[in-house]
Image 1 (tube, rainbow, N blue to C red):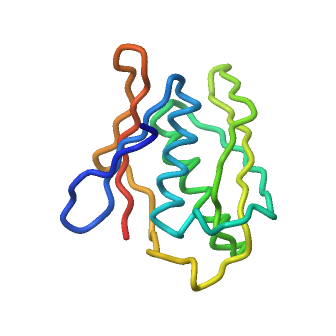
Image 2: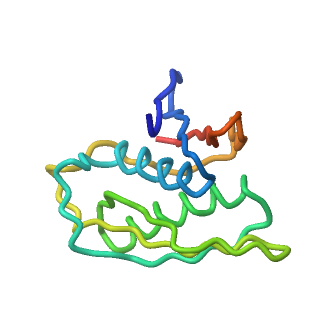
Length: 138
């Protein structure tokens, strides 16, 4: 299982899973994209590279998802997939990745996500898997 949506009264709460932190973050991005659009109908004809600098994993998760959301809005794209190319840790965490998607089409849209929040944020390794829990403001 890549992710699971959890009960929340007003917003969208989910957990994303992975064998590595990077895989869990890629799956968290996919879960967010699923909230925004019907990803099964998206043909990834466009790509955008993002670079994030963060002080810790929690900050990296929020900043990465927020950057993907902002890039989606500014460039008028629906993303389908996010792939992390490199994470460098040297006092700070530097992430480089690529998001794949297509130009927005109102027929493929679902829900407007206003923000990625720190509320209820959790990043932890449980046994052999990483779990990211995050809340999206809709």
